[in-house]
Length: 294
Image (cartoon, rainbow, N blue to C red; front, side, top):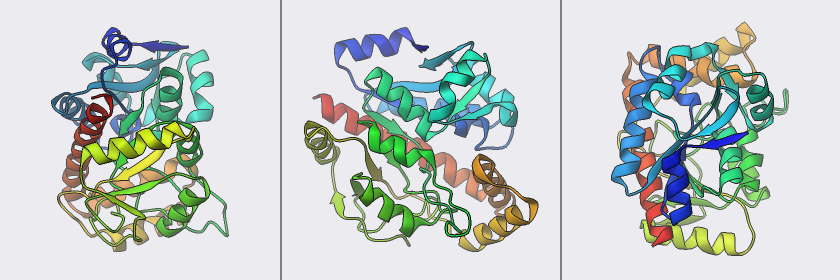
């Protein structure tokens, strides 16, 4: 069911650092034709950070960990026609031979099955706004609680109920670490989120906390890195969420719908910021992974 690329297998067997990357952002996170460039840049940043990239996706009847440029291109070309694959969907997608772009949660499930300890992404899912009216929580959180993996992201997707998500992280026992910041970044925005319980200033410190956490038999951790370029998009998100509600957009379709609206209204500026933060997070994940194995 899970197939590892030879480079990933060799790295894991040799105890070298490996960083997982998702494919949902390749297929669903950007306008047509741009996802492949994002994926390739993230992989380059992982290598420059001293680790081996292991991008995860479902194709040709297997959960593949480590993809070639041509295979990544299949996800970029498929776009919205690729299935969005969370933890519940990996097996069915593989058995049915469908092309499946893994979410953070789906990628974490693959990490659990292979022993990969670090992942880089843009933002993780969480508690959706309007939870009291329509209960909706991303599978990313439950999977992160189970998986012994540190995820490096620019916080929680800002279209969500961020304070409620922070509370749920505590409930699930998931440490929230701020990378040289005392407040949680809001994906596009470097500031504005709730205070973080712990601040770390170096990859060595982050790796030490992860090692201690896992020695206690615990699951995942979230390391929140503020984007280098900050963009205030909250009014646009509110408008996009209202449009989604009026059009009946829910569940897994929500994030790509809102992102597309924000991208359009910012004239592409949000796309540029998003691309950079994904690459920067991948680089930091690699640096922490390298510190962990040293």
